[in-house]
Image 1: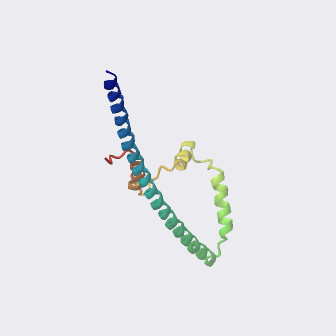
Image 2: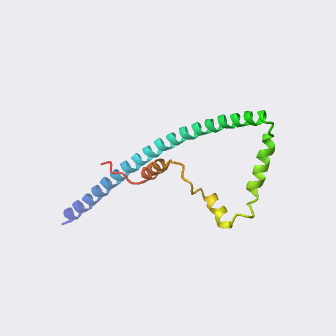
Image 3: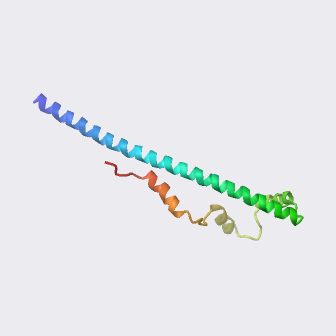
Length: 122
């Protein structure tokens, strides 16, 4: 009878090891997908930063041609941003701060969510 109990325990250990191995492979795939997502996101951010820098240079050049003091405009904008408009209701200000606008990257956000979910990689 002792041999039967040992066999049963050994089978339980083998089953646990197989489940652990399967879960480890799933986690490995999730990490791999997350790395790809991070690398892709970093590329996009760098491209966006370059675009913003180019646009800023262009706007500053146009402002100089129009005799607009860029630093003064930026300072005024910072002051206005720091002091919420008294005419806007509090709910309107809160909605603007939550970033409820869409940028057309909904598919990209889904990719990130999917990367964090379990994948069947048996």
